[in-house]
Length: 476
Image (cartoon, rainbow, N blue to C red; front, side, top):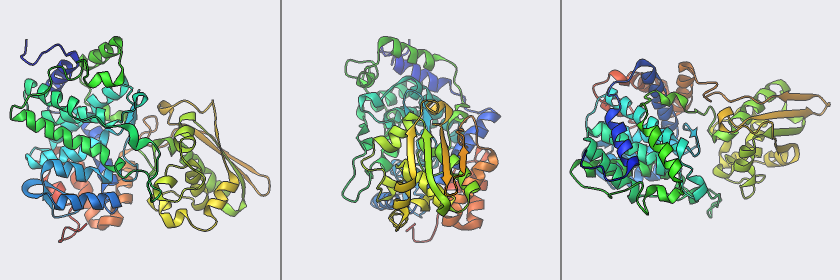
């Protein structure tokens, strides 16, 4: 029996799963993970000018060093853990990266910027990087499936950080015992509260900026834990199943813990990244079906001035998340209150015939007549028939009545990017160009996309990260 086995079956199962994870991926997994990588870069690079991302880079400038990892968009090189934090912030800037929902919901792609930083600093190959991203998705989806953290006031980075620790241990080539120690440190040294999802607004009328950091902070911590274990530092004896350990925070029953262990002891599934949900529009997943329906109706109606009434019938969870729990969803005044307001989101689709990052610019949100139109014509109703949850894509239908009495109804469908309507390779490339070209221009965007699509055969990731430099002074 290995020396690390200390009566914590979850710890043992996780460490063994990392040891069993393949170093080379089958073609289907390379394709699935590669799409996640391209989508992550699309979202991150398109958000480099977000205020939180700019402040994160200011922090990186205080922590420059040689031989670390590139801060995306700049000439700066920082320690790999700082780069993991900073490069992950724009990924969460516009709520635009992928999502997976089981008993808990989370964003599996949060791990990707951090693992790129680790691969760059340690000169790992593109093939090794993809294999470890696949492992992170595999572990994270099991944890999200089996652990309900939100009901107990905790946030999803607690789970994503465990998967990231597994992936970092694999990428560093740690032994099974070292991997167990990395996990034993990670599980007890950070717990993220769900207070960032409280809906409380700051003095500017925004949601907390820390929400943009919360995921990448957990990934940074995972790299830190893995490198501590690499040099021989040991963690808690029973980090998951001890009296006050990780799982005790979520009130899991013995049967639920046993089910988790059995899942972790099962076959490693390196292609689970194909089960993630991509977002076509830069708002949370619970609004995606409503956006699809609203844009389809808008095409048929044409002139929005002819609209007399709009009725949105939606999934109960979408209603709760984007209307009922918000302080004043009919009167958003900032980007983050607007992109968490289902009335504003649907109204913008109907007014503009499109929805993008620019739809939530504060000047547009507060433009004369915009909110008056939305308050006058848009009605939102939770609907039992549409309440089928994440598995069906948080369904919503949209009915528009025009001034002449004509009714235009778009029935509920899962949105593009949902596993039931997955993005094609062309869809992923189109999203990449749509987000990155305004920042990098056509030629650089094409070069970055080419490097990302071929990362599996690259001797390292340095060519990709070097292509992300925007200018010579590092002031992206």
